[in-house]
Length: 236
Image 1 (cartoon, rainbow, N blue to C red):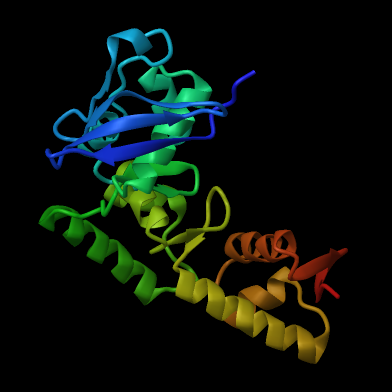
Image 2: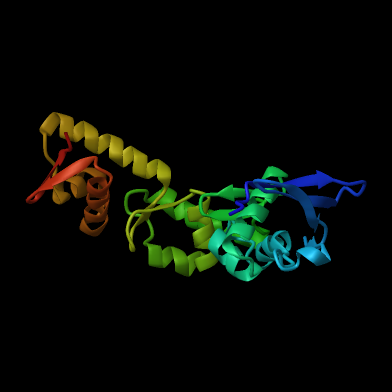
């Protein structure tokens, strides 16, 4: 049984048009062309239509960026479903687009090469106002619910994606800088006193029980601390 190894894009005299060469175990052949302009359509040779459907994977990603400008990228699974391509064929198309530097992969997401989230002046003002609240009270910041109310779900999720905020539980979020400062200080306390309670952490940071409970549970989940009844110790 023949097994596909990879797909290769061959340049033509047109900068936006590439021949698509399929490499098989025993042969290689040009199966169509990839038009990267506009819709980004895959144009199959008539005799290859049984193997490859028309695809507009690049265009689908561009459309996704237009519809959801505050999201870093489109999930590969969603793109696969929208493209209508069989799994092996879809993987080859994506690998070819990545190889040709038309798209990038970021974890489980794909995005047009060079795409970056950008904010409007109005959105920037909302973000600045929210971040000022974190600055004023870093250890007792707005809750996740308050953040979503202040800037909206899409803008809040963008801040998480850009790592401007770090959500540690369904209700609690800190800035990454504050979170790392808290981790460092708790480690110092534990090296000196061996244990720490939720109440002690609350008093040390001038925070609340809800925030410190979520924080210490996060440390447990990251393998930094271990819980023993009502206290935490550094995990050995």
